[in-house]
Amino acid sequence: MRSFLAIQLSEEIRARITDFIKSLPRTRGVKLVPAENLHITLEFLGEIDGKKQHEISLEMRRIAETVESFPLRIKGTGAFPKKHTPRVLWLGMDRQPALMALAEQVKTSVAVGDGKPFSPHLTIGRVKFEDIDLEVFLKQFFAEPSIMMGEMEVTSFSLMKSDLSYGTPIYTELERFSFTAGNK
Ligand code: 2AM
Image (cartoon, rainbow, N blue to C red):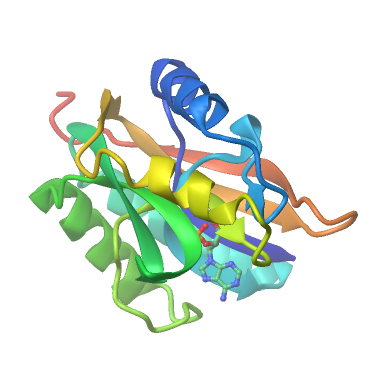
């Protein structure tokens, strides 16, 4: 099973981001992430079997018990690897100590991750080819580098399954780990 750990968006932020994406010019050169697939990846796990899934589930439940919910502002635009050679287009967010600490805990406990340091971002699309309209699209996307999408309260994270059939992946939430520290 192809899987990853991710923070889900509040419906309000998802709607704001969707409106922002809709406001951008059309280009076939960018494959946009459908609204229902938008998320913040904490850790990409790749292929895991049932046994590993069970181990990860136990570990993530344990971590979630140590975390308090925290606010997160989604703001700014950027690209990987670089703005002038964009492959992955993303929205940024505060490098919130609580977020960074959560990602660090998750990374340390799952031995199957890709080993890359956590770089907080929310992918909204991927550049596929140099379509004639691409430049106009990118100009508009980067027009307001600190654009504010809004704030949400992060109260949990999820284990997600990714099925890659038919081009656009289908993501299914397998388990949600709610933060319970500070609840008592
Ligand atoms: P992203 O967060 O930058 O969009 C599910 O595939 C999620 O895991 C995607 O959102 C993707 O990137 C992230 N991811 C990280 N490393 C990946 C990899 N090597 N292959 C596929 N997805 C990866």
